[in-house]
Amino acid sequence: MSQHKLSGKDFDVNVGDALVHVINCSLTIDDGRQVRMTNGVPDGFLDGPCTAKGELTVNHENFLIIQQEAQKAGSWKGIDPIDISMMGAVVSGEKNIEAYGCLLKLSDVLSIDPEGAKADETKIPFEVTSSDFVKINGIPYLTAKEVENIV
Image (cartoon, rainbow, N blue to C red):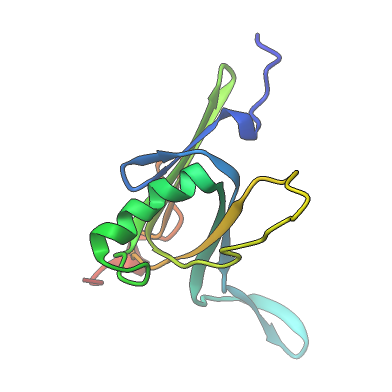
């Protein structure tokens, strides 16, 4: 059996149909379920809202790939929510995370180091807006009941 373990180097990130090489990529799910308390004692749980957000950090060349979406839309804010997939695989297994309807935003659009020893980087935060939400290795995070009747 291979000793090669899954690392960040093994992942491909697609923003829509475009392969983007990232410096960093994250996705965080905030599951709003809460413990129900009766007289200070746990007594089951209550469902709450679920949200997901993440961030891509890209170099200049990969920023230009994403910029093509802004050009098509006519502005950065005009980009329609887009699916992002992060797929990593090694001999021992794979991890495939899909986030649907990601609303791209920009932050840290410029950070200049006058010494010139650091490459240009741009951070692109995003929030998941689709009821398809997130799938992990093809398994939806949300239950079928949660998303039924959502158009």
